[in-house]
Image (cartoon, rainbow, N blue to C red; front, side):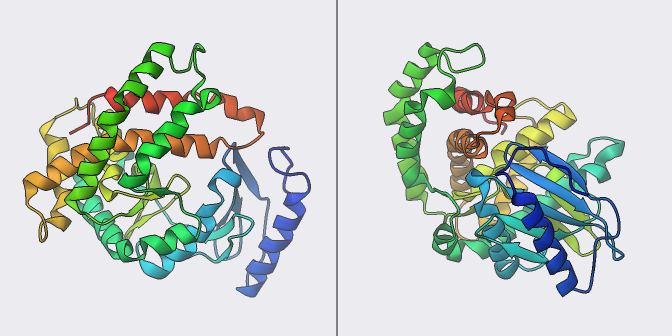
Length: 328
């Protein structure tokens, strides 16, 4: 039995349970035990036992609903790099996925080992390069457009959203920092123009790529949990990834290990650009990605769920990181 938490539109769970049962039956499976749930303001995830092993149902809120359509597109465009969905209902933001096995976080449970990322990041870069020619198609499917040319206007909209910024509140953006960000706007515009001028093609940008969102399989790595993703400069991914690695391994910004991981990722573009240009682009993209992170949190919290208040400080928190040091 699936418990009700009241965090989605009333009455949706019976429909979702029926859809789940129908899709499993279509593949010769059925639910064999108790379904367990994990609820967040941005989604609800069910672990569903079957005779063939667990499967995972996910219902996204309106702000992240595009993830279901994105999963189907990624499986088609980059087979083997993501989980192949069992079923997707893009209109309702529902997806049903097979179990992916151990995550990189599970593999690293014995202690931090940043060297794993020297293999993970090139595999992720290959996915982004494969997807890049279809960027417009992903935007048409509902994936947010956060390419460099779009970002100045998106920053303007974010700065005008005083409610999302918790302007003047204890956990929010201070009026002083708000004014500093408004004054920074022309510089941000120039930064985005330079990033676009370099010419690296936009692609899917996961925006939350850490060790908990990578499966480790005998056939390679599988990237999952795309609810924060956008079509953007690909290098923006490095912001969260390198910060996560630095946190886990207790590294300071600019540590040679982080430089090595950055360069391992950038290697995929060295057939078209020199390394100095790629490093410049990576630095610019990571600065822009602080705004992307604030935008993704605002989308995730686009819900009447009162539990969103627990996470609301992430929007102003990430926006304030515009003036912070990049990990590499």
